[in-house]
Amino acid sequence: MSKEETKILTDTINYLKFYKENSNYAIFESEIKISESPLIFSGKTGEKTVIPADSLKKADHKKVKEEIVEEPKVKQEKVISIKESLKETAVPLIKEDWMESVSFEKFEDAIKDCQKCKLLARTRKQVVFGTGNPNADVVVVGEAPGADEDEQGKPFIGRAGRLLTDILKAINFSREEIFICNILKCRPPENRNPLPDEIANCEPYLFKQLEMIKPKLILAVGTFAAQTLLQTKEPLGKLRGKFHIYKGIKMMVTYHPAALLRNPNWKKPTWEDVQLFRKEYDKIINNL
Ligand code: SF4
Image 1 (cartoon, rainbow, N blue to C red):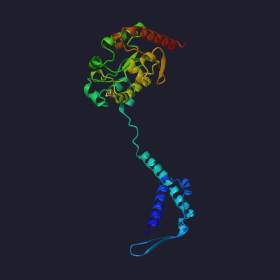
Image 2: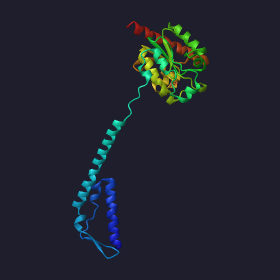
Image 3: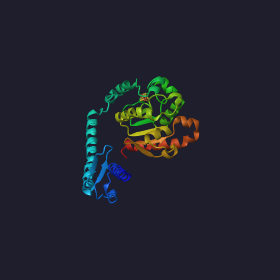
Image 4: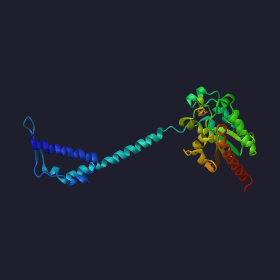
């Protein structure tokens, strides 16, 4: 094959490759030079291959184009059929026993051996479900159990818990009439912050608790609880002092009692927050 023939053949192959890969005939069409004479290739044994000039004309290119343009359709059909087969084989959302719980006793019992967070399930002493009135108008939500809570199976005990009880008393709530729980039901080792996958595992339990209790108001205590529930990185100082909506329920956020023990300067803003909280509660209860 002469150098010129090789070049023509190589150009033709490159063009076809380009065309196939880009499916963009229009931008390439004007560049094509149509050969006016047949192409003749000679083999090593003397035989000749003739490509008639006609076969290189635009009409033939168009035909090739149509054939190639068909390709996406085939691909599309394939995608649809894969989607259909995925639908058939898709695993339905797993129903877990606790989801069907109709009482808090059954619910607590259903999650007491929860193993979703492997590390926490190994290091905790017990799951801290929450305590109080299952028909409460008010739910207090904290971050996670600490050492005392893990030991006794109850949220907010120890020094910080006693301070919370006093704060609630000051605005005329008893621990028995409200419900108190945490976002995470197991103690993280060394009281570290809960990890995102631990929250993702445990938050559905909180959703279910709120769904069963149907409280009128939520008080979230501490930066972590506030930021997790509101899905924000805003500092607590900017989130406190006003109401937010969480799962359709009015929610106030304020400082964690443990933080108040560390920094008494936060007692005043906390007092303002809980007074506002009580005022809102009275308004809702009295239909004002
Ligand atoms: S933190 Fe919640 S989800 Fe994780 S193991 Fe404990 S109860 Fe289960």
